[in-house]
Length: 136
Ligand SMILES: [Zn+2]
View 1 (spheres, rainbow, N blue to C red):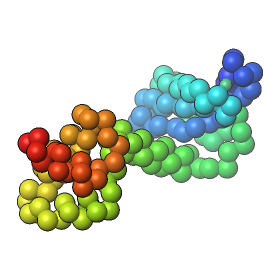
View 2: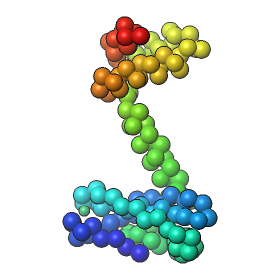
View 3: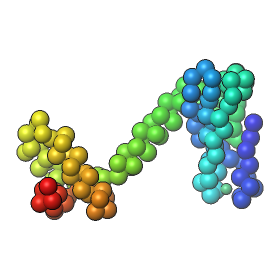
View 4: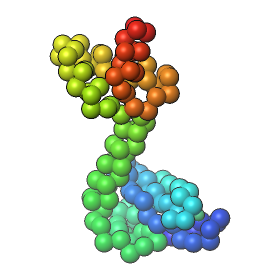
């Protein structure tokens, strides 16, 4: 099974397989040229088929075992979540956060991150921490 990116007229490459249990599998493809993405969700019968052909789906000859692909796509999702949260901590800010009593730290971290997100900051610096504190 192969997919073609209509815009680029080239084969899309397999980008990951999300195992949705016995009933469904999401097979994700990405265009190496324009990065457009599609996903195919299988019905139970197709699931059987996809699982039995395993790694042979996709435009490239993938040597990865299905479990590895699944693992990889989970890691990818975790990374995506990190970037969704969006904010990075500067080392000095991270250090200062350690001054907050351990019990209150997760709350403080969250409050500061929320403030940073609201203000559209990507990195939490000491200044952002001060700002967040003044805002509380
Ligand atoms: Zn394309």
